Length: 386
Image 1 (tube, helix red, strand yellow):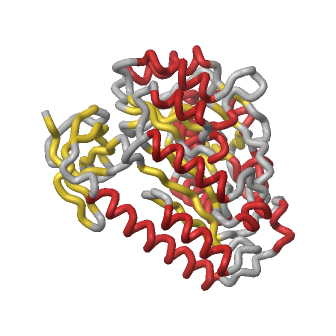
Image 2: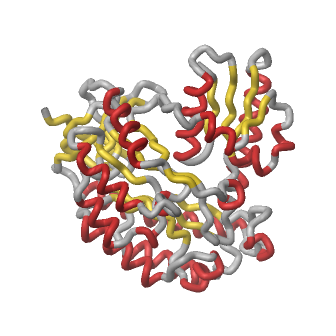
């Protein structure tokens, strides 16, 4: 099996494993699947590439992914660079074989949103959507291979079906008859796509009560400068819609702190919004200018120390909210999928995104019921219900 260094988002994870399948089990090759969504991701990609070249001098070295497209000269030492277009052709009929209990299923690629800080539309501009029959066939394969969960992934899954006369709600309705198959989880979804139609379609599916929404900010002036499609009022309505339809749902968010026009008042509006709404998880990123984006001309005026302090404040807030969320579920019995980490330690991931430490032995990928017995600041414990 090829040796894989997989970096970046869930979509990139799918494509990296699918490329391994396309090369075949006997291929003597090292694949470095790069990412450039942040400056740190790009630096990490280059570091992994150098490590792979040094560690495996006798194997063919393949570089692919978004960072290769953005800066191919930095990966010129590769024996082969595979563009995203060529990679998509190679993996078109290959199912990935990930070493995990949950299966990331690519339904869509490409993004043309006008976000001023984001490099993704530059490296993945072509909108493509997998046909529904192909998705259903892949889910059947997933079920046959013992995966307990399917995560629908893409560059921007809300754009599914654009140009084909259908949308994400149509796909969700088509998945409803899967019955006893793996449960379904959405990956990150933009707030403007959390429409009543989508929420209604999801309610008819054994869907995980987990929504990760990249809000980025909750200050209207910052959102406008970011090129986002909504203001705080519309954002609040989307979050409230999810919370009302899916009680005890895990609601996560991406937030950028230190955007060039974010002053202390703007940050405070975001902080208060997170405090008020039922968020349970946050990914908080300090802003870093990306060459080639519209926002690059704004510079980087917010000091690193201020970004760090704002990030810490949000992280402390969400730690308290997450702890309260988990305590509130103590005693409940939840649907979960068994997973093992790289050390062989076993846990179960609930549909509403709680990782539960369990002692009972179960095969990886098994769907079980777990009773939450204790919620501590950094761990949640439970027992399997037979």
